[in-house]
Image: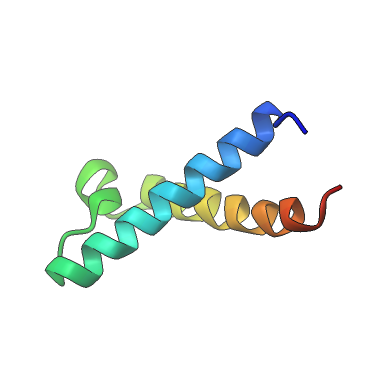
Length: 64
């Protein structure tokens, strides 16, 4: 089954979030989202998009 653009966006967001959490675990302080977007509304939007991407990938698990 071919993936839609939304499928790819969600998967990329989940990968970004996973890599960010992995870097936080390894370095104990390296948060790429905060480093790139700062600490504020823009970073919260990125975190929210990653969370929405994760929810959408749950849907992808059950999509036929």
